[in-house]
Length: 292
Image 1 (cartoon, helix red, strand yellow):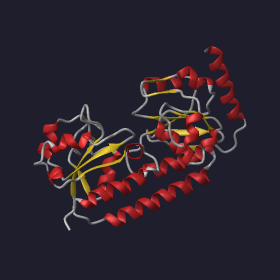
Image 2: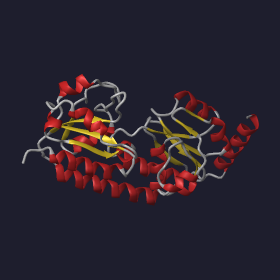
Image 3: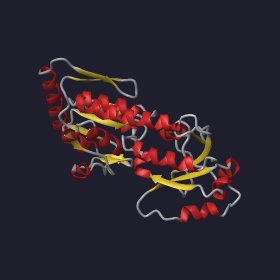
Image 4: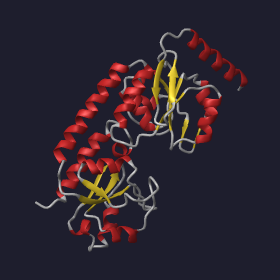
């Protein structure tokens, strides 16, 4: 381990010695992230960050990814460095990254602090607003030396968001229960980005006031909220059983109106440009619940 840390220190110092104008961005933790030169070896610690790096044109510089980095397909061929259950710190260090892109609330704070003590440069990501996806593309592009591609991807994404917002602006509000898991029954609070997409579609999350980002709720709480629409994440192998559970309560407005829908879970729940594709489907479902 000492030899690895020594080698890493030498490499980082060498990069600084060759530096010209440093690259500087502010991450989502409000920290200044500074590189002496564009990152050549990047490790991603969350699936959505892997996807953002590729979208920003930095895919060729990614040398390690977290578990479940399934998109784009090229990411599946890269070495895994662990995931939500824990990071493989030795594997990360052995990859000699000059930039590690971390998920502030999804990775272990203690393990991230260890990586910083090893001298690694970390960019903390915590996208909470729709436009944060665009700004993350721009900042990652800057750090990877692919600013042009990052800016282009960010603008295409912003244009799509603007078109969707214009289309559904001023619509009659619709109350929605968004189900991210069935057992235990889990939803999202108003601080979650999916709530921001719901607002863009002209909908209101019935559990927006809960303090946790992804709280567990009871069936009784959903019955009391009586949403007009229930939407669940769709993934491979998911059948219609989840709908049958809710149809046991025909008094629910969502059940009475047959407004039980799904959206692609991976796209909707990962903070990447593909969330816009899922949001378009989300808005269409919500539109069906509005009175003519």
